[in-house]
Length: 459
Ligand code: SF4
Image (cartoon, rainbow, N blue to C red; front, side):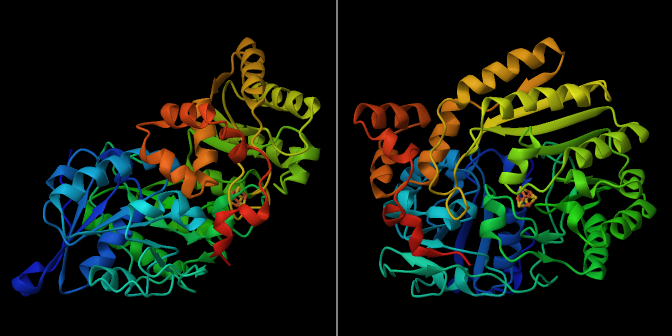
């Protein structure tokens, strides 16, 4: 594992007053290093004179000893097990530390984790002193929920504009990262589209894009400082950036390889494909039929998808990856069949097609937050897999029980928190909930009055 050294300013700090603060990503180094939030948090804290920050992952968290604060970023529900396990051990070696969590999982619903942390940050920290105040044990802050203050409502905090001030130009990187050795360039946060199932759209609202000149400056500096020749563009929908072609051309002229995190089919143009030089194009139709795509407000027609495939073919794209969901509200057998038909149609155009299918997880704050989780999704995935394998289309899917667990944790409450504390992994959590006949409560329709996340004002 490469060392994650933050260029902090300890040389100018008064050693006696320094607070030792850990930023912890509760999973492997290679996942943490690909997470922009880790770099943003480290950069943000390095600006406070009295704080000395170090970054840790699952491989080296045991080095955190006698720290003053541990900030854990929770990007995925299935990391809760690692996080709790780590906290249990760190509480012994860091008796005076406060434990704080933040990240998308916390913004959506922190209640299952309530008793394990001193505080939660609901929102984005840029332009605030929230983290530094927490290190000094001030819990009475906007955007913060703490077991010591227990506010009835928590309003999400976020910067109205994204500027270069808090941007991490220095980003320790590694070949092991999901993007390879690249500079992570966040084009924008939030999404101007309206997909009903989408958590990113809900919790990062309103959409905020960075200025083109800021992005050019950040990219130029980032490439130089980190000695990389690849830039990963980060945004929920990269193609919706007004100046995407200009930005990609600028990077191309610098001889830099560009890798977009996600592109919508209707934003793929010849101009963009020419400069991106992609070998694999990823499209997320989410639903197979036009009717269901309209219902979930994906706003992508079959014509948009086939047009993107045509452009991909023209620019010698070798592989198309398709993302679908099953178990969407109102889904019929025909909608499931349409996933197979659409995949086959694309396979007729491009030799290599890979399909990823997963159940829709009804997430808090989205239009589907109260909808049931469709347990028959498992059979639907199996059925599609069988049919597509015959067509020589590779199908990938997440572990089904891990997805069920994701739903339970996303919509969970304090009761789930108790079960979580007694479970080492998702299998144990699901078995004990099943044994106590509680699993259905979290998978079926949710009564809005009983949804704990209603205490979080996200917009
Ligand atoms: S386009 Fe993508 S990021 Fe935007 S709302 Fe739809 S699913 Fe979410």
